[in-house]
Length: 173
Length: 154
Image 1: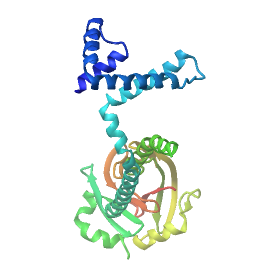
Image 2: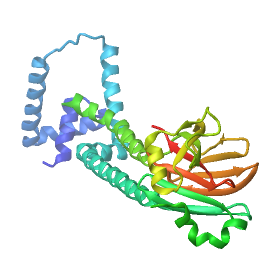
Image 3: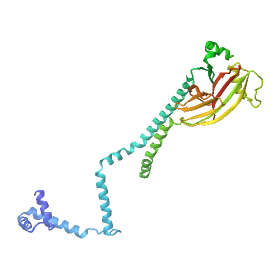
């Protein structure tokens, strides 16, 4: 007996077949021994199930209980239709270590940036750009010590000729 | 465990945001307003200033100046304190004839412009660090000298 006939027999037992088909199936059952045996078995199983099916009661009302089921079905369906969400959840376990690594890298970059800025500033301390804005006046600069930077302004008309000696004249050290 | 996961997820984004923002700001904290003190100083060989109101400059600065220049005594004529705003300028009038204009620049650097009798004379751009004396000076006709010493205050 094939699977279709078995299912038809089940439908026959449950009273789900159209009348005409049920009649032809009844005629076939009467002639087929194997079909009769299966029919008896199915009827017995149905009787057993019908007599022993437990009746469960829920504390909520029928409508409320169904609404919970409905919400859960809806939630699962919407989760299935969001492929990105699944990917996001699969990445969750990597977030904590990634955050740690990112923090270490950022701190290292920050420290390097500060160190570089200090070195750059230290170099820049000794550099100066001097611009004379008056045609009559000249200027030169020098650093006498770590803490003293001097821009000496002089009158070109009176001091230009002796400029090389000016420092010697001014500076005693 | 679920609570812990949920907590770590909720905290992760703002935490990373703060770390990134903080790191980005590290390079920007150097930009600041400058508290400046400018002194107009007179260098002379005379023991006393012509104006009895002029006091000798404090000894550490006088020592530094004596190390470099030939004049024996240094008197403070005027002192100006002011704040140069971040990326801004401020003028310090040291005397009727002498004004300096200080501009805070990127770097951090300062631009010090010397203005004599209303006309710009000289412009110097350099880094200015705390504890450093930035000195503008020149010889006057009577054999004395003037100095404008600029320092950044703490």
